[in-house]
Image 1: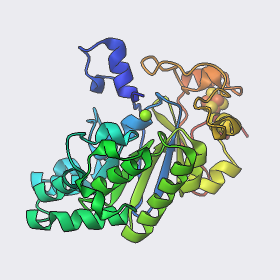
Image 2 (image 1 turned 180 degrees about the vertical axis):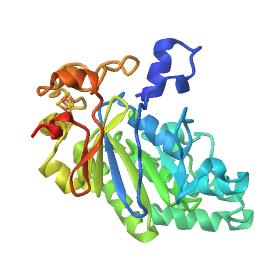
Image 3 (image 1 turned 90 degrees about the vertical axis):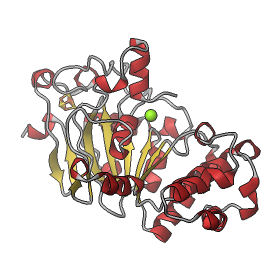
Image 4 (image 1 turned 135 degrees about the horizontal axis):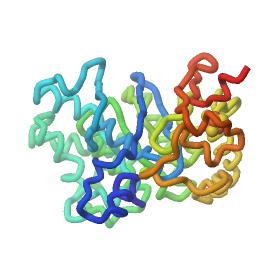
Length: 315
Ligand code: SF4
Ligand code: MG
């Protein structure tokens, strides 16, 4: 599967750079230290792009990236490099992101040596301790990626990310390619690592069950905008935005591992030409005339619960 930006780039052919398209329209993403934030939406809604923007893999056409209260653009090169190491991304397909020609030892041990966080002589010891952290035997360090199962490769990808002592992990569909039983094991590993290493996560997924299991707070994204943000329990107990309501209604299908959000009426519109006003209005059962013209801002509808819907203005 391609992320929103590359899908859009494909539509245009090769000439157009993905950055020229507003896969993310207007989204503010704030994550507190120690928090697990789930980011949910249909494929093509821009959630991967937003995650990539957060770690600096996609450039912002406007807006600011801050890390620990500091504007990253204002830091010098050394400070920015240090900040960048603090945020690592974990991808959906660990096989595609692991170089098949490198041994696990090199896959995991390269970055800390390159960045001066470990001496070359300390590498093997560091790799062994990282493998143990993710539940693998240190003896596998000499093997190549193809010699592992999907779940083991996911663990190797996690060990590689941990090698540079990150504080924030952005996980993009990190368990989506795995069997359900293996998914649970890897999710439990994420939770254990969070406690052991005081990690913060942005957990991007189309799977509401996964997000509900792991997140403290959930963000719902629709066509490049965050339409709802709430503590996980509140979001599932009292969803506010009609799009969220529709997503939750489709949840039993998701649990049955049907990938798409078929319960939401209509096709997701093209992110190239998003509908005016509230992007959701063509699919919304509650749409009013103003929904076509006015973009609803995110408003606090309950403590720490934000939703972008004009219905909240209706007395
Ligand atoms: Fe539906 Fe209007 Fe709310 Fe959008 S703003 S979700 S169209 S009611
Ligand atoms: Mg994606």
